[in-house]
Image (cartoon, rainbow, N blue to C red; front, side, top):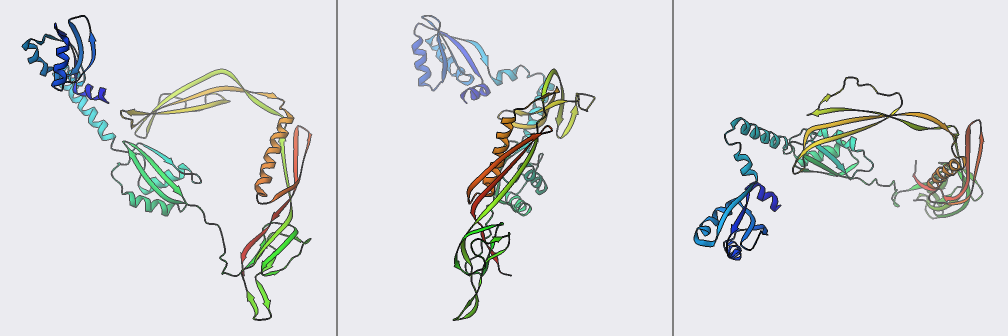
Length: 391
């Protein structure tokens, strides 16, 4: 930071010839003159750097016999601009340039989204643009509270949103709502139904009238425990049915994959084309916009122009590189494919039966006609009771 200040205020390097150079350093300290880069040339010669304004304070001390002070180097913005003091057109151009850069820095040219998981950044940016904030928006020209209300109305999945601007870059921070589970309050009458098909293994009824028994098969949605009970004391009444019900369930997954595969073999040929985007208008530096090669990988790189301290401008340099390849047939490792498919099917099984216990699982494979057929059959023991509103 000190170097930046010295550059804008201007700095000089001086040479002192004196029999007592230490006296010069003491005078600088006593008069608040900052020096740096002190270099001892010989016994009577000293070189150091200081700010342009401090050099003028030293001149009277040189006349008082401190020594001979000589200016040997100048640097910084004031000295640079002094070269152009009679070139009015150039100065006007610099003034217009800096004014234009300052004006452009007052608009948003880059938007990032953070904190989103379920919602995509594209969906958030699309609704944000419809609410009044997009690339090219004046960064002080919108009401943050109004944008928050609009976005939450447009995207009910959002719980909170904030826009932080740094120069011409805006960072949209969001927090998504946690969906509330469908839970029926215990003071509301309900039934217990089967969440999935299975064979009842055990049933422990806490409240309500059981409609099934162990060893009975049920389908998804079948009534397991009724919330309507008949009491000798009060007659028919409705309660919030509760029960712990375990059932044996079965899962069957199948997958087919080809054993004939091909891989990319790069030919070594590539082509790069360039484009420049100014304020949303694209200028292509090539004639043919079609794909260069029949089979190729395309890599696109966008570089936004920035000026210190990191201000983004609506100037984007783009490059598209096409790398040609050919397809080469090869025989994949059948054992590796089996392990991969087993991992995929096992992951699906553990996701579907996450609340239960896997009793047995059998994985079989059959190959033929260039394909591999895989099947996973499993038996599980898991809870299947869910509350359902009474009709």
